[in-house]
Amino acid sequence: MEARVLPAAFATATVVWVLLLGLAPVAAAQGHASYIYGFAAMVYGACAFLCHQLPGRSFHLGSTQLPVCARCTGIYAGAAAAAILDTLVPRLPITPSRLTLLAAAFPTLVTVIDEWITGGVTSNWIRFAAGVPLGAGVAILVIASLCAVGVSSRAADVGSDQLN
Image (tube, rainbow, N blue to C red; front, side, top):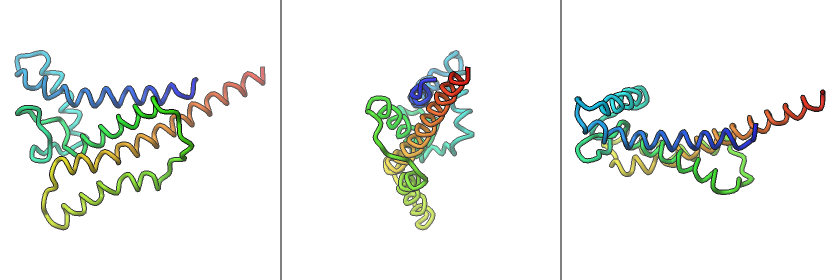
């Protein structure tokens, strides 16, 4: 298997997911009689397992709430952006690590700790912005893992060819 097939599939999946998050409120606004409403119900239902979906902490398209909160929206947008950049820009010689993930999570951790300590609610745009690096960091680690799987799979194929 080509080493870049899995990362490309991941990039496609992240972009499709972000598009679904944006299309679901549009579909939900069509009303219960519309068959498109069923699509929205599935997306909102799936997101209920991933996010608290609090209205005050979520963006809205018109009067319809997105299926995930602002922080989750930032995480998914960051993952999609990193995955897209990875497909467009030649791979840099960076070895992602747990430290990469910790650094990417730092802005989110700061906002969460601030909310716990002060009892206040950070604005949705700040929560979104704090989520973007976390999503990008996770995507970088996933892509690096997928590249390693592709390379080891290819090496195994080459090794089996040599045995024949």
